[in-house]
Amino acid sequence: MPPRRRNKPDPNINRRSAVKNLEPSLKEVEEREGEKVSTHEIFTKGTPVEVSSDEEGFNGAWFAATIVEAVGEDKFLIEYQSLRTEDDSAFLREEIDTLHIRPCPPETVVDHFSLLQEVDGYYNDGWWVGVISKVLRGSRYIVYFRGTYEEIEFQHSELRLHQDWIGGKWVMASRALHL
Image 1 (cartoon, rainbow, N blue to C red):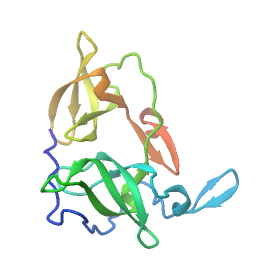
Image 2 (tube, rainbow, N blue to C red; image 1 turned 180 degrees about the vertical axis):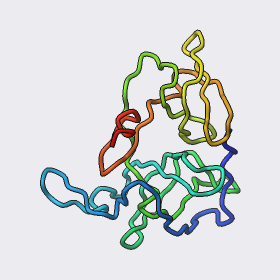
Image 3 (cartoon, rainbow, N blue to C red; image 1 turned 45 degrees about the horizontal axis):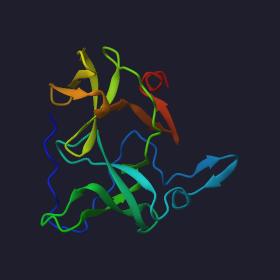
Image 4 (cartoon, helix red, strand yellow; image 1 turned 60 degrees about the horizontal axis):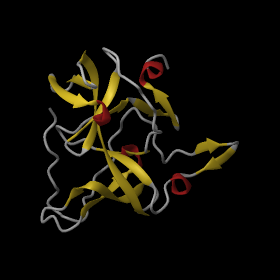
């Protein structure tokens, strides 16, 4: 399974350069009810978000954070909600480019997950994308993680439906494949 996220050498701020990925940049202006809205209007101080990393071993994982402040045109200073500094004195803060920030996905109520359904499993302080490989008794599931070829058992409460942030909208995984 994905390794535990190690804290950065600088316990308060880490500067990370932008790396292209397939998700739209939140720097790009998105439309809301016919009017143009900038990322600084979408992500204001105190906004809960999820943050991804391009670090080896952490690709595809999303970590809960809060916007602290805008830093330039396409970066934000964020504070993680569960990752702490090396000395454990505070929550870790990083400057993150808009390619690695998305809003928190909407909560969806799921009575049970099905075999081969794509889910996010909460593990090592983050949400990791996997697939239900076995449905067990007692609201437990085995989830397969493609990136590491590992399977881990999860309780129902540790899983959520996988959703993708595409074009400024949340799309269920099965629908995302057909875009």
